[in-house]
Image 1 (cartoon, helix red, strand yellow):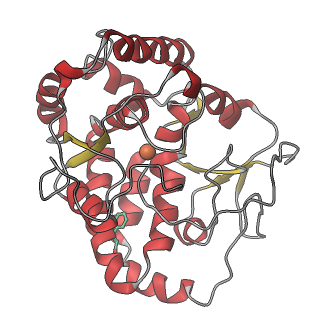
Image 2 (image 1 turned 90 degrees about the vertical axis):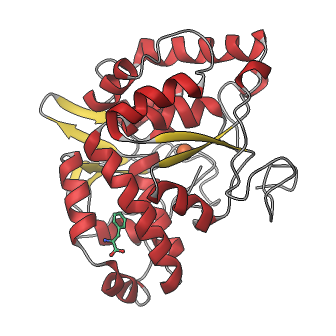
Length: 298
Ligand code: PHE
Ligand code: FE
C-alpha cells in the first residue's frame, strides 16, 4: 500500500468517529454510473455456472440489476430485510479494530469511489464495485451473513492474542478468494474473485492453481499474494460447514499452535492436503513477491 492511498491514522475530516461517511449518492456523476454498469454487465454475463448459487440469489434478492451505482438507502432496506446487514461508506481502508467492530455489528464498510477506465482490471484498493458487487450479494445469504458476524467478533478477540495475521488469512481464503463445492460443480463465492473478470475464469478453469479442501489450521498457516491471481484456492463443502467449524472451534489453542508451526508458502502443498484438483503451477508471474498478510479487509 503506497502513501498515496487512502489509509489514515484517524478518521479524516468529515468522517464520523466510527469512520463512516455519508454515501452522498447524488454526488456520483454519469461517468461513475456508467463505469458500474460496464463492470456489472461484464461480470453478470460470465457468472451463471461459475458463481455460487447463494451469490446469484443475492444479486436477485437485492435487485442489484438496476442500473447505476446502488443507492445505499434502497440497498440497505433490502439487505436489512434479508439478513439484518447494512452497508456503510468509509473513506478508505479503516483500522483493524474498526473494521472488525463494524462486521460484528452487521455493518459492511465499503469504499466510496469507483475505479477509472484505466483501472478496469486492476486496482490496489477496494472500490465500490469490489465492495458492493463482490461482497454484498453473499451478505444476503443467512449462513454467510452469520459467518461474517462471527468473523468480526473473532477478529476483535484475535487482537488480544496478537493473532491478526493468522486470522486475516482465513478472511483472505474464504471471504475474498473462497471456492465452494456445489452438487453441480465447483463455484466461486469470494469477493476478490467474483469482482474480477480474469480471476473468475482462472480460479475455476485454469490448470495452474491447486484447489484444496478447506482446513482451518492449514488456511491460517498459508501465505497469500495480493498482487496477482492466487496459486492455491480453498474449497468449502458448504457455507454451513464453514460457519460451523469456525464458530465451534475455539481459536485460542490454534493461535498458540500456529506460533510453532511453519508457514506454508504461496503455491505450496503439504502431505495432509486433500486436493480437489492438483495444479500445474505453470502460471507463476512475479513468483518471488510473496506477501505476508497485513490487512483483514479489502
Ligand atoms: N471461534 C473463533 C474464536 O474462538 C471466532 C471466529 C468465528 C473466527 C468465525 C472466525 C470466524 O476466536
Ligand atoms: Fe474485499
